[in-house]
Length: 379
Image 1 (cartoon, rainbow, N blue to C red):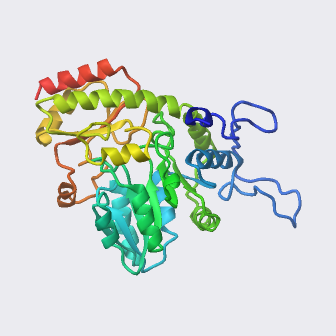
Image 2: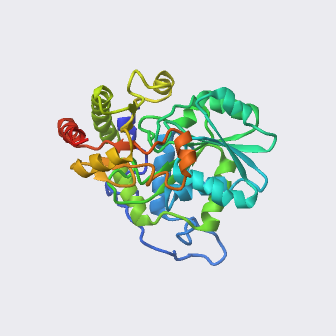
Image 3: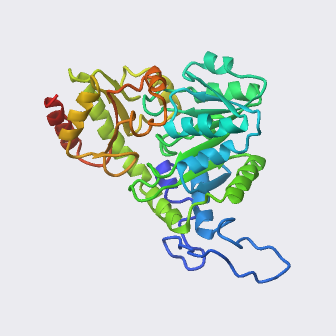
């Protein structure tokens, strides 16, 4: 079954009691227990809620997993997975990782004796060389945020398995519509559901999928114990957004490729980062493990002053944190997604003061390119 069909036929699209075409919102904190001495599936919504269960089933089906878990944010999802690690553990992470994940690893988990080594994970040899006897997890993103570096997930999974290391991949940029890391041997997939899965800038959510039952139980223990769960209204919004994921990704991706090619030819653009371009490092690996280049690209102007002037003239995209919405969103990683990363660390990772990230929405390609062109004319 093609993804365009599967996204609408996951087994949770109907209310089994009434046949309603939209799964109900169970806006309840607690549930009547019919028998004082017998457990039932739902008792308290932190531990489980029917609407959340439906969403967790949907994301597991779409990622090709056996278990799904829904959290209050993407960072709640990521940190809950990392909380399965014990004190004294070592993590290998890709160096150009999302700023919030960098902050969690370096400022929060370091307090518990969990150390992280950041490496150029696009180089499998460097990934393998960073593993220590106490390495317990690999934290990866591909394409990475915001320079869209490509990691060979099959090779990373093979290296990890040979060393007994858990693999975690943030699949937010691609969504299961374009990339399904479990099929390449990855243990855990995480999402900021806020982005492409929700798709409408109206919900904050995080999702985790796994295939292994014992690992799913460990992560559920953290989910239930710490309580960073997604509420039923947000679960419903996310399920509604997911129904249009395939068509949104297709349209946004087509426009993103046109914009990337336009920017690559423009004399005022220093560099464009987008795996759909023939010039992009790792493009062949990406297109082997994903079904398309996605809807996010980054490009570099000369400096922060040019960024300021460009952003001031631009009219159509939101200038905001986040990505993956029906409207195009332009972000400035230096002060937004990677503000938590020290400047020297940012620069070393290629996140310069002139770098901008564009998440392409559903506007006309001609209108977006025209808007970008008039903004660049003012530089």
